Amino acid sequence: MRKVKAFIERGNDGSFGVYMDLNENKLTYAVSGDGKTAKEAIADFYGAYADMKAYYQKVNKPFEEVEFVFHYDIASFLSYYSKVLTLSGLEKLTGVNQRQLSHYATGHRRPRPVMVKKIEAALHKFSQDIGQVRFSA
Image 1 (tube, rainbow, N blue to C red):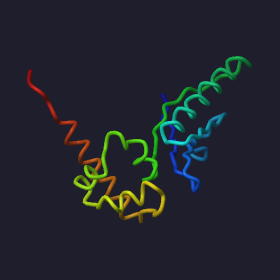
Image 2 (cartoon, rainbow, N blue to C red):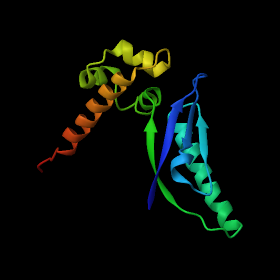
Image 3 (cartoon, one colour):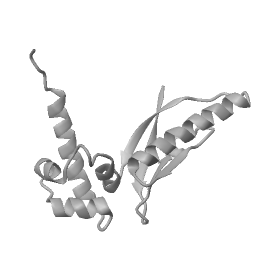
């Protein structure tokens, strides 16, 4: 199944949106989603995808099913994972202080590209470390 980029972003009004990368994917359809939270926007996005698939079946048109790979802006990531990753924990992982992370989460400030890379690299390293965990019974 082909993988398609979908972007999750926080809007200036505090809401969240999800949209497909149409330039790269050249599909015969497009879907998007919106919500008060990143989680709601993703659910709305998948609902629109299901509706589009049903419509294509109804009009007897071929529908290419795809797998979505989500790309987050920092505010959307922090919103989506806020119940799992605390700002205190993220500070320990990334070296970015909680206050700065809070500014990013609320949209009061946008991180520079260097900071985005620093946060992303720290999270990828953490995921590699977690991926190596094995428990003995």
